[in-house]
Image (cartoon, rainbow, N blue to C red; front, side, top):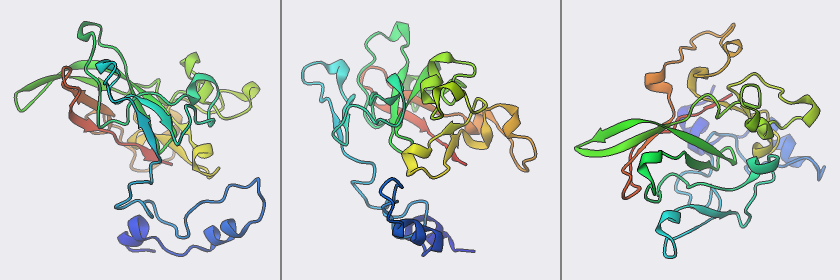
Length: 232
């Protein structure tokens, strides 16, 4: 039992974390934190998410905000093939939509899971009299090749064992010092029903659990962001 500040920003001393950090095995990833807490060392931090190198748009305005390097590299090496590439924006700044009529996918790089999420066009959107468009994350985002073969490179098991998870939950363990971290949308929204079995309180609801982003197309300024993920 811990208070909210300990579980979030302040952290607390944890015997398991102490043992892991004391392990001298060079092949065993050592978490860089001395205390346990979901947001330890993250509050008021300008370095937690890493270093981003992005395009300014001076040569091509339609490249504004797109990432070139993350922590000095164009790839994360956490995932195979194209899935390991650093691409998209960080979500705060987007280039103008070059061809609004085509409604292209938007690529959002999420450092918490060391990968890009593809958002697909959903509908027109308006806020405070400003018109824009809304993009959403659909069921393909956390598929591991079960329904969408192009997502198979996000499977971290041996190739012959992939896909190793039912659709809707993503194994982010390699991104988190090999801790058993699995990511989904809140309440396993859009996930296989197997994840809802024998669990109390799960009520997936599109209205409150959908991952979405609305953008004004000429300026690339976000009008609304709902970017909730669930850590399992």
